[in-house]
Amino acid sequence: MLKDKIKSGVIYLDNAATSFPKPECVIDAVVNYMTQIGANPGRSGHKLSIEAGQIVFKVRESIAALFKIKNPMNVIFTSNATEALNIAIKGIMQEGDHVITTSMEHNSTIRPLHELEKEALISLAIVQADRNGIIDPKKIKEAITVRTKSVVVNHASNVLGCIQPIREIGKICKENGVIFIVDCAQSAGVVPIDINRDNIGILAFAGHKGLYGPTGTGGMVIADDFDHKKIKPLKYGGTGSLSDKIEQPDFLPDRFESGTLNVAGLSGLLAGSQYIQKKPGGIKGIYLHKNELQKYFIKQAEMQIPGFTCYSSSNLPSVGVIAFRLNNISVSDVAQILSDKYEIMCRQGLHCSPLAHQTIGTFPEGTLRFGFGIFNTKEEIDTAVHALKSISEGN
Image (cartoon, rainbow, N blue to C red; front, side, top):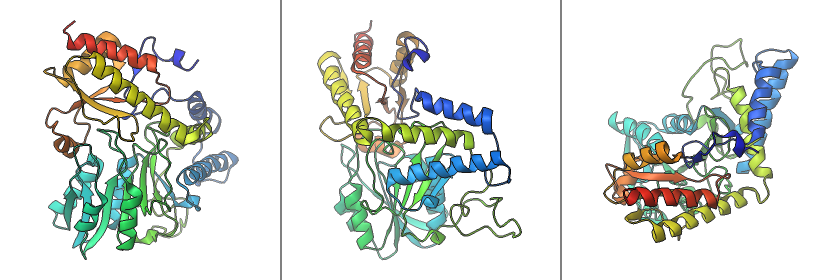
């Protein structure tokens, strides 16, 4: 059994950071590449290089199918969602542009936007979410000006787990000729996403979270009808193509993929992506499982734990991320006790999202965060609730 391979007694509830354990097929795929292939894709003509290239293409096809795009070459691989967002944001914005984002963004969005604003290259509008972390699409519409180039939105909050109405926001962007960039780090593999239906221009995803791939994997997905030449590359270098020229190729995916790809990681990402898409119930089943765990945890915690305060709503759709506190006890202390005494792994603090914590009133200390995965069970939640009860009661 997969769970038997985890250190005995460990309950892992930090899946919003990185999913664990990985399906065995993911581990096997990485090992197979490292031991049987090992070559550089697209650089040589021998059979191992060709086999490595075939793996990379299969991952593009799998990710394209996941997000419902026709051309797999529109899938650009990066080291994570942060790099993908930096390519999109820094590659599109020009001097004088106006950008709209929200108060629920991760620093992977806010920091590059803030840097551009500091350099006086762009002006930035931050639309405020409500206390549940939800953005009203009307506020996005009201913030659009004649200079608005792009709207950048976090699909699912890594603090609260709440899901934004991206289809409605995307429609507003399309009607106003604004580029819609969506951070799907938490939602990819958990919520069904259709780039065309949701009117997304550029999507950023993480491979190591809901897609159950290795760390160091992620990507940028460009809509089929989006002109990729509007995006300036973040880095330049060898691509294995047009090697007789010193100019960067302008076709996909080479325009944005300089240097050797993480083929070992992408081998695992292919296995993870295929695993969740073939899992009984598919992505929708994963979503329902995480929502069930979320509701169960909140209900049990509210009934049993003295001083339990939950900031995530059990009445809203969620990607299975819960933010909470135990009154008068430092979140760092609680997380340390959970880890050292109970072998329960979670996260504490601001989760790289200071604006989100300002929005819900938990800044500067932050919250405890449980992030549920596909392998978590109600029995594990019962154990966690018992541990939190003991901590809250001073035992």
